[in-house]
Image (cartoon, rainbow, N blue to C red):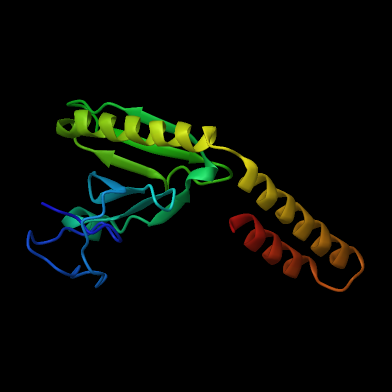
Length: 174
């Protein structure tokens, strides 16, 4: 069964639009999907992001949180094979992230598919890390300059600590 590339919802085979988020269905080959127990992971190569969202009946019951992980923040990918005693796990470790939000469980029958997905994301992560760094260096310098500017405004008493923290979070997430 196909899944929506935007929200991970299960789709009817001939669907033109997602019945959950309303997005037009495309045959986008820059996205790879894995469906776990009530959650779907979508790796979007074009945007270098990993989206984890609810899917299926178990997703609606469990009310698992949704998250989007920029590849630049991804530090580790943990895979634990499922068995008759415990579900399997794919967990994405990020810079300062909450690992429980970035964890997807799956039934043992999906071990091979989960391992294939994990290996695919690791390969894409290596490619991302090995790409030419020129563009990223400019962005990091400008982020550092922005933070320095707002720190000076904080020290001068022009902005409050709360305003500084909000700007800092906004800059680091961009």
